[in-house]
Length: 69
Image (tube, rainbow, N blue to C red; front, top):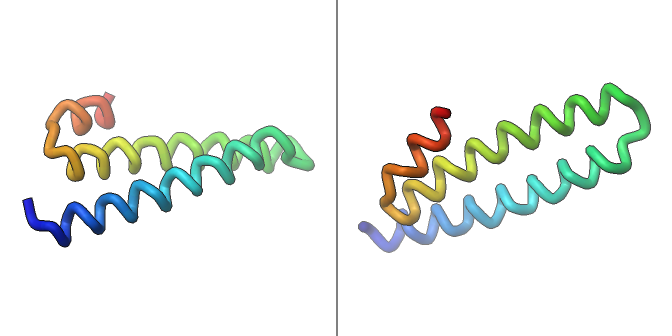
């Protein structure tokens, strides 16, 4: 695999991890129920994106199957 793809996937995984932490913070400390629901939905989408990027980074098709489930 190209070093550029590996570096881009690593950066993307780092950014998604930060996004997950921020969504978790909003889920716990959200001022209203609507904020908590939106944070939970975004947390789900970020987790799926992290699985797909991890599949690209580690060249494992199992991650793609897990993202589909």
